[in-house]
Image (cartoon, rainbow, N blue to C red; front, side, top):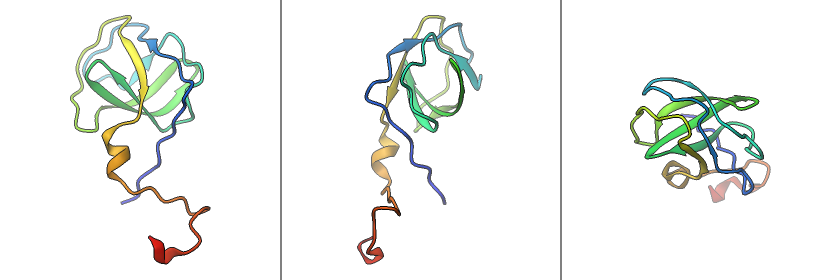
Length: 105
């Protein structure tokens, strides 16, 4: 199984949904996407985690109910936060450009 390393930004703004979303929608619009990293990255909307797989301006393409959460409906204006998630800490990330001695893995 290939696991993509999710990207992070310490300066991504807390934003909000621009429009309500249903429980299965995979394209969401946020009010402000300032300083969000290139995909993939994770966001939290209420108790749901979403994995962002693509962006275009303020539109995010997402995998819903990510990291053992459940896709639910969310109302217009609900807060959206860029987060590190449990899955980021369960996996052993390896940067092949940094690890020179593969016996350490």
